[in-house]
Image 1: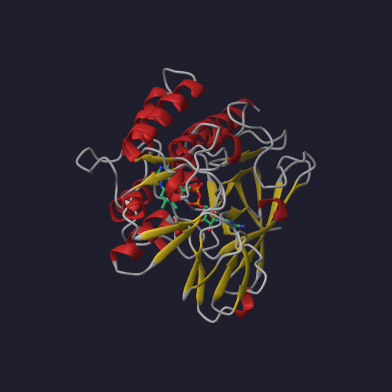
Image 2: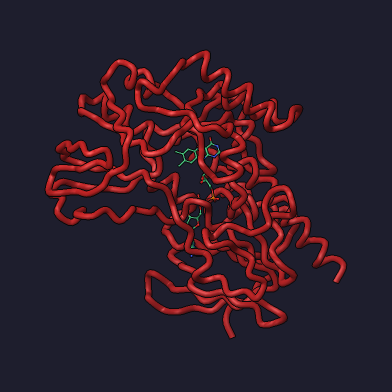
Length: 362
Ligand SMILES: Cc1cc2nc3c(=O)[nH]c(=O)nc-3n(C[C@H](O)[C@H](O)[C@H](O)COP(=O)(O)OP(=O)(O)OC[C@H]3O[C@@H](n4cnc5c(N)ncnc54)[C@H](O)[C@@H]3O)c2cc1C
């Protein structure tokens, strides 16, 4: 028969924790399933010590518990994890760890969720009236297929973020190159902050023009360093294609001083330690770090008649059109509208209230 609860939340990152806290606040029972052995695994296991939140704390706090006023505006990884730890304790969140969801289907009344227990290898079944998908927009790292990658004798590794790694490597004396195939916006933390505040009062295309202008004034023409600015503004691009602007924490200074080199062409193939580029150039490397984006495996396990997700694993309904509400079967998406922690906090609040209303009036 399987374990039964009101709500199953899949994913114990900030989005899943936000939903769990809100359900707890409304006294709605839930089960939180997380495939890793800890909550916020992206932050605990897959980011490195020097990482900071890119956005100011007022845009990064989870619902019902503000980030303490004595914390700095831009939290370090350590402080963000301390805040999350306090959050988990405060709302008594107890995820079931090492539980990888492999299947979820709706039988007309309830969700049946099939879960692999990664400790024992057993297949477990959970049942609930509501299902909340909180698996993140970056749940699986994607490494491109590169001809000859197998012949590379050095190390290659995937990472979540490249700009701070390039900076760290250069600071440690490593001869570092960044391969930039497409155009990108480079903005500072301050510009990102100003943009987010302005978005509350001005239309998106105005904010994009202002932020792009600020970037041009501060950083100047970047084409001579191999960096092209996209035609579309930074916020429009993020909403449309999920492409984040690069938040500069010092890397641009290294690029301008020549300590970090930009290679403005894609990798064509690899031949031993020689990496061949699409513009015909070849350079030897000892280590390759892939910061080439993510894929989402949600579509593989979420079986639904409603055809709710696009091929990329994102909800077809986009912000602000009830993007958090799945179909009629009590399925919800939190943190999948490419709106960061701020958007996830709002999704969690909407979802918890929606479930509460359905429970109260049916
Ligand atoms: C370096 C860095 C800096 C950032 N800075 C900011 C910032 O300043 N402001 C901001 O708003 N955002 C920021 N972000 C983005 C945002 O904070 C993170 O993407 C955030 O972790 C998203 O939370 P999430 O819960 O939606 O997804 P995740 O943190 O990815 O959590 C998803 C969880 O789901 C689990 N999961 C996935 N599939 C399954 C499955 N099948 N079964 C069970 N569990 C599963 C995963 O193991 C994971 O723990 C930053 C991200 C990074 C990497």
